[in-house]
Image: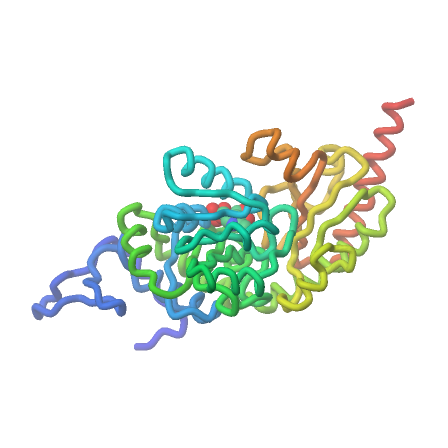
Length: 361
Ligand code: PLP
């Protein structure tokens, strides 16, 4: 029997030793005995994501944050970009307070601050502001200082950027594009020499379960198609927002107005599905008036989703307003006809404007 799709090994334990006395071995050469350490369904996912990323190995975790927190604890000496996903920044600040050697710096400052022998952690498109780090320059500096560049490639996915071109380690929240259907929370690290991180995953108990590993693998089958369509749709929506008089600014790497647009053109094969913008109407009011776009704090799903980033950040208020500003929205464009999203945003903004002027009268 040879199943075409990966079987789900829904078991906590494996017989060890086998009935003939042989050891039950995983392909890493360890005893395959307990699903907190290793599970064949999870292992198959790890192999597939590692191949997409261009690395020899991978480890799957029970969320993107489980992957990042395990990685940060393993890293010990760490420099984290301040523009990262706010919960990642929060984690870095808390670990620093607990005495770990963690520094934070703006994306542009990373090359100067890269710690010799440490780890530099940065998102390839930052959440939520869509800044793009100069990866070729950063990779050179990291090589010179013998530090590991770890990329959070969640927004780009390996379809738009193969992390192994620039780095030795990559993280993704598989909750987003890898799984793609908003029905799984998961995370993956890929890279070289993951033995120590494997140990940390075992000790922290942060491994993914086999059923969700299967769901992520199902998502991987359409990853390329989806990411290309997300990118096309998002560009259409970003151009609409840029030309709309009710919008103050839009940040999307695919727009010529984006400060790192030329760099983004060089390093990505498309610009992804996420953008951030500042409407001239009240963000909360705009969200209330939407009929199609779903107010929800995630991205990379088949349906478009929006969230107010300023009011929902997990960082202290002063830091949020310094890093992100006020009244800012993050929009993840889905796989629908983009005209539906454009029309929905248009009517929601115009509706908010009418309300504002009625209130003002
Ligand atoms: N990294 C990035 C860039 C994210 O946007 C997120 C979540 O939004 C995470 C990591 C954390 O992933 P998860 O929600 O799967 O824990």
